[in-house]
Length: 467
Image (cartoon, rainbow, N blue to C red; front, side):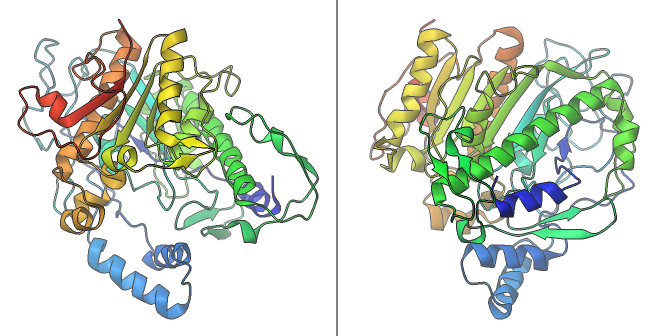
């Protein structure tokens, strides 16, 4: 590991993985809602200024004012530090034939992300079953993102009976992270670029690319500058370590170690972590991610990566185009979703069109295992799965060219992700995953409107199992 990331990793005494989980509609929290931009906002303004390569006091102050104008009063629509859903509570119908359920009292907001939105309290069919164990998703964010950037996607999955661990990576890919040491000292991790780093020891670069598609090997001298390609591999190595640590924490929660984890929580939260004991379905853990996080998700699904704690399925949303080779050696069900902007933009990726590389990964898996999908969500753009379009829909639609309603756009990702999670648990295909291949290619100029099949208006399926 290069010197810069090694220092961050060595002094990190925490893993930042907020949990999104279902709770009872009658629950009340004694904690305030979490702000969408964590405090102090000045840290995140500085981080975004560094991403823009314009970091100085004046520019950072301008970024802070802009953040305050756009998101200053925005809170995450979720209760903080409340018990995990229990079937002993009133307020839910528990009829497995009723389909997705809403509480008979209390807030009934199913979706949406606004400055005044109430917490989501919808739990999918069967969620009230006694001693129900919940499937788990480990989610990895993209570049210039953080633990809060996908709160609607993660929270919506939680409202349907899924426990989501949304990792905030400390690899320099986010705007700012506060790292607390055991001594109480704080360290700020800002965006890191290759020029910040040097290799500390001679290194075989094949060590970093295990599980990638390259298979190349070279030796790097100690003190050498870090190339962009090597830097991405360093970041992915650190992210994989954070995924492993998150899985261990989830296992600890399920074993009843919630009280111990609470004592190490620097936010003084976790009072009800004991309610997670024996409530996680650790045989049904899905690795998911967006952009750089999708590249990481594909790496984590390599059979040799976590052999003793394997994932049961994978979700890759807009796999990265500049974050390293994509792993195609996968043995579990896989869902790959492109936004329209990702499919329509022709990008050469390691000598081949990126779209073809992704399609080949899905087709290869179907030839060997039979459960892989690759599809494009029509009218969406790269940020559509994030919270940003929901907070400022007009601005994001204007700047990115999205032509779909912002809530519909993110709900598509939630719906099809839930279908894969249910498939992993029951082998029953949902509405979208039952569709056959519509077109192996994607024509970005073709507009599908008013067709009889509403699924064809929303989706273009490129790869699907034959049966």
